[in-house]
Image 1 (cartoon, rainbow, N blue to C red):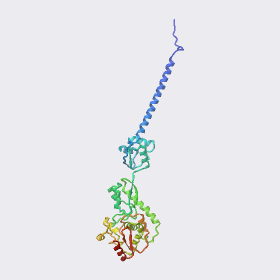
Image 2: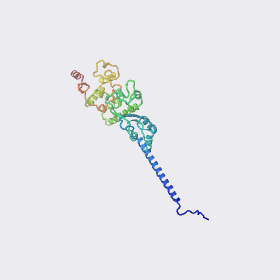
Image 3: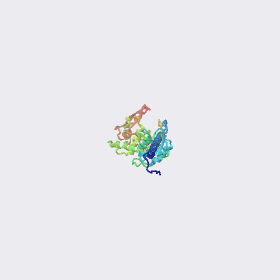
Image 4: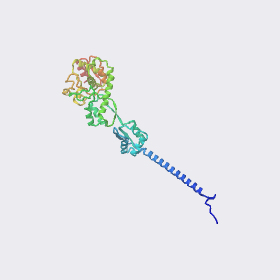
Length: 357
């Protein structure tokens, strides 16, 4: 009889099959690794693409108002709605990966579709709000300041009118029925950097703060006894008269001296600029009929200072009001080149008028 042994012979091939299986597993893992790595690279590539500018060639500037308290998601949506980022989620992801999502600042911005997500986010983190310069010349009235800000797009009409009625907590701001505009004289003329469509109250507060700074600096060095009996409101009123009457800076202190001399003698100031303010219009020449306008600002009819400033004086006029020139002049007449001829008595003044007018 023949018997079959269950013991495999030395030539059995099963181990080769096991090695083949391991090889296929290794190949599968390698393929899976490549696929996963490729997918990660693809995802990274797609994310990177979403952070690129929407339109590199655009030169358009788009205004975006970021409200106070806005979170990164709402900011991202505002940007996406204006086509400034490719999608909102990519902007949120960028900010969170770079830990910027809690650092974005509110304000009025101007962005371009040519900016990347990184550039837009940097502007928001740094608070690079859109600002523009506006210059308020010396001698502007509150109404002229209003017109300039309105035409420049920095305020809305209703917002400005409401802001004029606000309480700015300054002792020198006098509210009286005889005063046309309580803020007149105190919106300091300067060049300001303002937000487009900003808050009118904030603009006024900033101009008052600038006045406060300049005034404190001037008062700190004031040693003129003649001015010590006058209030801030009265000194600024005098400075406004100087500002509107005088075109040459070198004459401001001399005209200040004339004003104080006339006040000390109880003489009417008879300043044409105050009559023009009473009329509410600018004219090159003040007529005799203009001098009869019944207004407390008419210094031909009413003695002493007008109820308040007639314009917003600059630093030089304020300095002149605090440091008047000491002299005996009581009159002056325009020569025609911006300067004046000064007289100590009425007869000399009449001769000067005949000479130059």
